Length: 143
Image 1 (cartoon, one colour):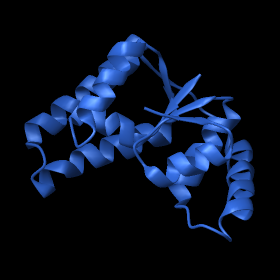
Image 2 (cartoon, rainbow, N blue to C red; image 1 turned 135 degrees about the vertical axis):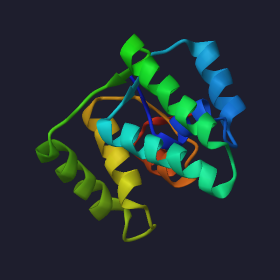
Image 3 (cartoon, rainbow, N blue to C red; image 1 turned 180 degrees about the vertical axis):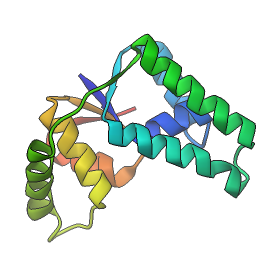
Image 4 (tube, rainbow, N blue to C red; image 1 turned 90 degrees about the horizontal axis):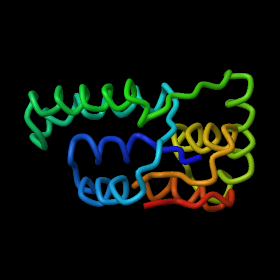
């Protein structure tokens, strides 16, 4: 299973900084990507905010969100959920284990914990800190 974070989705659908790399990876691999509802929300929120910084036009942001929703309905993006009773203890374990030596954001920790609890072996992310945490937990960070 391949778990994607919001940075990958934003790059792919909104064509931000790593957009070409995200598209190249997905076109080459033709894999179903697994996400949580929190990842989808984070990606949608980030895409909605891009026009405020002038990175894309408002109409392009709306189109990117619609394309992402279409990929979910087509099954190219699978939304999987876990109970908080599983995710937060796993996230706390990561925090206790790693955050005394390095600083990791709470969302990064929650996403890696979710990926682990879903038994993902690979994480799609352009977030360097999240990639570092995933690799420390023996997940392959891509692309």
